[in-house]
Length: 115
Length: 113
Image (tube, rainbow over the protein chains, first blue to last red):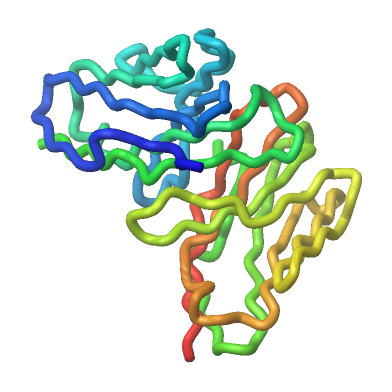
């Protein structure tokens, strides 16, 4: 079955602009989480959505937002971009919120560069 | 506050030998631990996990050990193969974390032929 699909894979923006990233989870998966990866910082949790509801949110400013649609697809938005927002943004899906096996399935990520 | 730490940014081993990747955590509420492997230009893929009720979990060439008193876990790969060369992330979650994982910074493993 198809994996987690993220679009776009690469994008370049300038400071002050805003960006929207999209994620299609594995078919049947209802939970979508977003992570930011920067060099030396590992993966930082942004937020988790389940059944169109945000269930958990990481320590990021309000410029970072997201939503989930009824088909479980999710988008995240970053407004008023800053240079420090340059990162790989990873989306992960799981069958349900919380863990049984603990496995998250990650997409290949969207590489954002802010100039 | 880095609650999950991987103190070695890189590790190099010879093919056929054992690779040992280490991870320390500070949050005593963590009760589930996972290792992910990441190749360049790909998302992380799940490798192996362990619950806090166990101290060892084995899957083929991969074994994870958990020492709760020391808040330390390690991943052993035996024997190491060149295809194992990747960045390995340790991650942890607690009962109320949902799908929120706390990741370490990653260790770049290089297995030399």
